[in-house]
Each structure stands twice: as C-alpha cells, then as structure tokens.
Image (tube, rainbow, N blue to C red; front, top):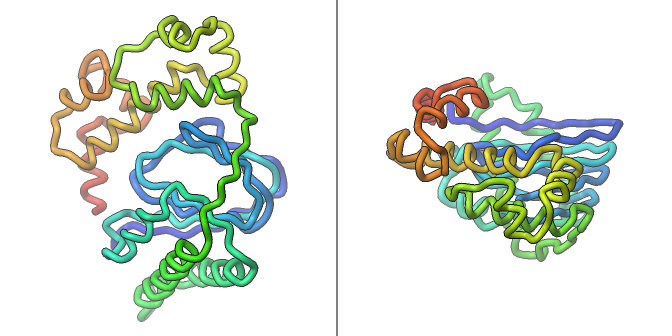
Length: 263
C-alpha cells in the first residue's frame, strides 16, 4: 500500500514548531479554524481560516500561532495518478481561501477520509474515490479562486533575505563572518535576529537546508554518497554521514534504502 495519511489536529492553546522541517512527500495543509503564521524559506504569511496550502516534497516550512483546528493529508508522489500529480504540482506553495460552501465540502471529505477503514471490504476503493473527489475540488478551487497574496512581515526582512540566500547558496562554504559581511550587519545582530525569530543560528539553518537537499538527492538520483556530500556543501562524506545519522537516526545509504522500499 503506497503512503497516504489523513489526520486532524485540534489545539486549544498557542503552539509552534520550533524549527523549519521538510519531508519527502506532499503535504496538503487545511486550516479550518483559527489563524496561523506560515513560514517558508523566503516568505512569511499570517493567515486566517479557512485556507489551504500544498507543500511539495523537500521544501522547508513551519507554522506557529494560537488555538486552531487543521487537517493534513500527507501523500507520496507515487500514490498520485497523473491527473492528481498535475493538480498538486500546480497548486504547490499557493495559498487558497475557500468560500463557505467549499469549506463545508472539504471538511466533510476530510472527515470521511479519516473515518474510512481502508482494511475493510472495499475500504481502499472508497478511500481512493473520496480522495479523488477531494483532488477534483482542489482543481476547481485552483480555477475559480485566485491564490491569496497575504503577507506578514513580523520576521525582519534581514532574516528572510538571509534564509533565501542560504537556501540557494547551500553548496558554498559559508561562515557566520562571511554571511554577516554579505548583508552588512554585525555577527551579533545576525545571531540575535535568527535566535529570536528562527530559534536557531544561521549556521544551524544552513545545515538543515543542506540535509534537506541531501535527502532530495538521495531519493531522486542515483548519485553516490560522496557526490551528494560535495554537492550539498559538506566538508567530507564522513562528516556528512555522521551529521545525517545524528539527525535522521539512519545512515544516508539506509535512509535511501528505507524510502525506496516504501515506494
């Protein structure tokens, strides 16, 4: 059975992911109640329910904010048929605001997916049919509702600019001194802003970017561990393997094998 999961989360208090994260599958994020701040490597959005965003594989992101209710569909690319792939790809990283009727339809479909026992007779066929209709509704939303352009600048432009820079120059050798010089600020200013808004240092953020890119190359290419290590800016294959295992609890080779076996 190829990977797809649907979950609902309700929190009655403020809650935040401390660090940006990524995953090798699509994530359909649907906020049905409350408001959330949604952070991507080069943008920050403050959004109020209902809204829908699709995060494609290997894109770093995080959310924070107050009480909320949200649905998530996590699905591997291999689970999607060609039509569904086209819809998910076309909707990726665009923020949609469903109207009242669309909101009711999406919530009903998500609840049906969660309640469907896929192990019962015809359960998998029922699940796939409901998911297909959910994708159809997404395509209608894509055609009839322009993506929202709401942006919130609570995170200083400096932090967003540095995040964007590191996300595209991750293969280059980088030091805190060099990054500070590029953006004409002191190391203290750079560290203070990153610690305050990202809960990590610029170098920690860069390491996460490199690991995210490495995971993408491990899954999407046949490149050797040494090649991937070099392409992602690690000083050596041994150091890459050590850091990767610390973060993922698997060696790069075993991570690749584990994820390929799921497909």
